[in-house]
Structures are given as C-alpha cells and as structure tokens.
Image (cartoon, rainbow, N blue to C red):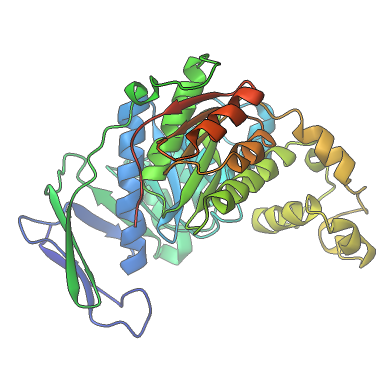
Length: 391
C-alpha cells in the first residue's frame, strides 16, 4: 500500500491534476485491477462505510449499489421469493447470502444501478462475482476476493474492471477535512451508531414495531447516512426499495422515493412477469422496457408500434386502474428521513406506497400535525432525535 495514488482526472476530464492521498500512514486500499477514477473512489468509500455499518447493525452480509455518490440500492442477505428472483433476473443463478444481498441492492432501482460501483461487506465469493459479471458496472470494493471471484471479475470490461480491496480494520482519523473554493472545512466524522435504541421514542398512538420493521428502519437510516441530502428511503424485506436523494424539498424526496418504491412493486405485477420478451433482448433493455410499460404513457407507445422491438407480440397495457388496485396490496413498508418531516403531506404520500412504520428526527414546529396524520392511518412513528445530513 502507498501514501497516494494518482488519478487520470477529477470529476471531469479538465480537472487535473488529480490524486487521492493520506497524511498519516498508508492508504487502506489496494487496486487489484483497473484504474478507478475520482468519482469511483468517492462512491467506493461512501458505499464501503454503508455496507460495513449494515453488517455491524444486522449481522447479515450487506451490499450497496452506488451512483454519483448516493446509493441506488442497499440491502442485506435476506432470502428472496421466486418473484423477486425473477424481477431481479437471478432466477437462473445459485445465490450465496452475499450474492442475495447484491441482487437485492441492484434490484431496488435497476435503471439507476446501470453502471454502478458496488460495495460488499464480506469477501466476494464466486456466486456474487458470477452475478456481477453479467451486469453493467464500473467497479467494486470489498474486504477481499476468493481466487475464483477475482478471476471472474478481472474478465469484465475486457480486463479493465475496477477492483478495489479495502482493509476492513482501517479506522479513519476523527477529524475530516474538505476543500471548497480554496477554503478548507473541518468537522468531526459522523461516527453515530444507528441501532434499535434509536427507535424507542415512539410518539404515535400505535406503538407496534415488529422486529422486521425495526430491521428495515435501521437499513433505511444507515442508507440515509450515506445519501446526498435531502433524502428519504423506503425499505421492505431487508432492502431499500426507493431512495429519494439530493432534493431541496422534503416532499419531493418523499415523492421520488415513493415513486421508485411503487415501480419496484409494479414490477411484480403478473402482467409484467408475463411480458413476452424476445430472447434477443438483454437485461438493460428489459429494464428500460419494463419502466416504460408501467408508466402512464405506455398506451401511447404501444400505438406507435414500439413494442415490436422488445416483444414477440403486442402485450396488453397495464391500465391505471390495474396499477392502482395492485399498489393497494403493498404494505408493511418502512420509511426513514434524514431530517424532520415538516408537514403531514409527507405522511399522506408515504401511506400511498404501503408505509406503516416511520423513523425521523422530529423537532418540527408542526410535529403535532405529522403525528396526527400518522394516527389517522394507525402508523407507527419513532422520533430518533438525530439528523443524518450528508454532503
């Protein structure tokens, strides 16, 4: 390991010179293959922290799919239903717990995960590497790789796939720095531990908080800790199912994340599962086509004859009424917010996507309105008292 590593360029090709370096000691990473860039390393270090904390909090293998310094998905290795395996395109693969975690993380928002940077909490095994090999991805960070997994991953992208090994025992300095406009900012690292103790201050009439909901709220909150703010995260069944990142308005975060959660559930509709794809259509094109199919304007696309590219025959549209009825079945969803909900409209929107459990800092002058809205729908809400902004 070395004290610094030169990079091709920074965020953009005109931003030179570029490097990563450490003031004390040596860099805790080793590049095993490829030439990761500036944004790759930002994704790698943020995502590694996320999966490391998920593993510590749940004692399950964890994975994250990162794009532009925010997660497209994050998950732990909870076994999947046959339906999820099918919509994640992994029903033909043997899956280890770690591979299951990545399949879930990638499956949360497959369109956004296209070209992702992957983080794994555990040593990458053959099953996980086999899954990663056939997806479009920029690189991976993990504490290690089996010989078989490393050989598989090195064959990606004509041998240029970015593979980073990180020292899982590395502890960064307590004070961190960041330069902006030639001025250095300094702050203490966010070492906040997120666990079940954060969920004890339940402020709603409904106090019921099942263990699975606690797990999903913890996943949501840890995900938010490494998501560009403002941010809201919907989680269910051991994974994020919708992340709204980097919005200036809290309600826009809630809507964006909710729409993604709705899309995740709509992909499980029987009509979607039965779409007559041509054998020649690959996974990325299927993802794009499914996204169009479940959109409100698909009937117009059908009328234009665009279906002929992807399907062997013209599929029946998924009508608005059918989508509305299907989404009524979505339940047991947990949602976390990195800062307080200022209005009850966030709760109203979350409810439409099956949310029953909420964790947020509290502290708004309108907390009473937010609590009242939760009580109207018998939701359970905990005030964590902790903000999770990340910039």
